[in-house]
Length: 328
Image 1 (cartoon, rainbow, N blue to C red):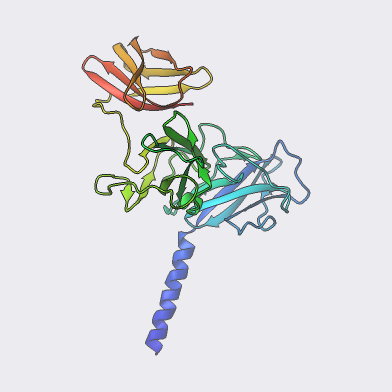
Image 2 (image 1 turned 30 degrees about the horizontal axis):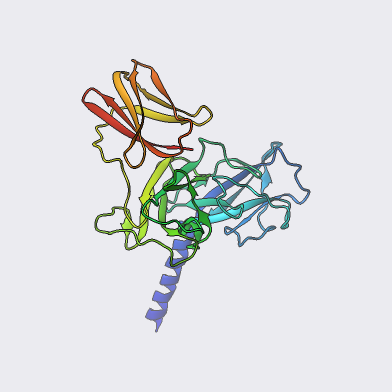
């Protein structure tokens, strides 16, 4: 009896220790410079504290407009928002890539055990472009008749609810949505998800076959993304899509989309005096082409009127490189 009790106590201690040591300290911060801060203070509410509007008070950093708090969180996905006060009705309503549904911010904590400082965000807004961790989901629906209820994604990010995360038609066949998280750009994110041609279970895909789809386990898509800016290129009920040409990569070739000017900027550090640039759509159809990138310079290509996922092929003598770019 004593031996059994001893093992029970040891097991309990190990379980408690695992829960404690799996937690990491997460610094959450918000810029209140554009707000008149309530006498009740600035709070955060979400799945990280049972959605209590008054339990978690942020502290002003010196005389600045920045308010922050450090919380011990377990690995997983969280939804949250800030309040300029301590009761519902004083909460913010951010939108955009950092708040894909219900005006709730999204956060992922991985199991690395590393403490993390989140990007500073403005009250009611997202962290700036180029900061944090961005990820774009793309799914090719060209083989489907798309539901009037739209294309959705369900997974660990949504608590497997099928009607929260809706993607947008960006090219007629490709449905896309970019997620921006406040974690650092090199903070690995584990993904477990699938797409739905609708907004309810029963309209979900069964991608595969698992034996030939590297990112599919069973009928779910499971992978880890470690670099900000990654584009997921999925096919509904299938694997992934790529342009069907050989890719012999140039070193240090870059393709940058300048949205305000509706231009692609193609450059290569060593110069490509004999290069030709071709733009293909997802079906492999040639859309545009342009010759010659001079040594040490860049080529600008007007992409006004284009929208969706495209492939940029850069040819130089007997070598070529293919880059994917989302134009929106």
